Length: 298
View: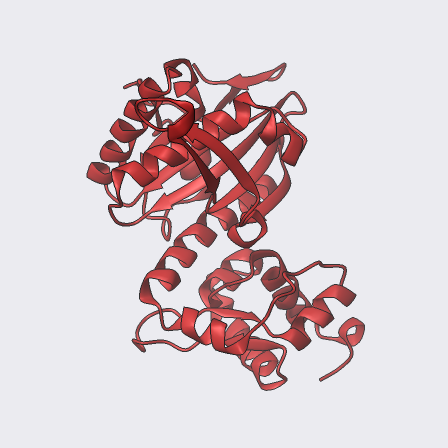
């Protein structure tokens, strides 16, 4: 394999993208950089990187399922030479276990689909700039807050760590900034766990912790479910959590929708009037703008 700066452009792109997203399928790599007709070419380039021990192909339990790829320790050193700062921890055994976890693979692919949509949106829509993208690994064990149990007393406060699936930070026409935490749900979960998370987000903003960590007061939470029923349930739970915290006024920070992340276009995800805010029933977009200004849709 050639040195990084003499490496074929396609391989440089693959290493760079894997450094940014941590896990990608061949299909996702193709979507990021090429037309769908180039998929076999991308697959060949990935296989050559695997053979050179720069990329690890995670094992699969089912051969028909998409395969995830990630950078090896050697690949991460190359990514650093390309100007990236990839996640440093790498354990082959841990990565192989992740590949054999069907839930992890499906959830990771879905979250990455949304992040890819964010990047492509900024590439293709004038006036939208993606300032930064944070993956689950970069957000892990970062946001610690204390929320009250019910009934709220000093003795029943609960300290928790919010761990979003990802986050994206946009600027719209140089006038409106929106920092979006992304939450992607494919299956039902415990109501209490989800509601604590909602309360945690509100607390992080109210205490200034969010701004301290990410240098912006802007904050919204996009909750994406795979079915309409699940999206409705999560919205109801969020509303209950906000009422319990006496912060129904924060409902406009929380957006709910259901999508097939594998097929939804960037415009459908971020620009279509398909979202519902907590305590609202009207479908809305994330942002509205004209030639002179941008603002949150109301």
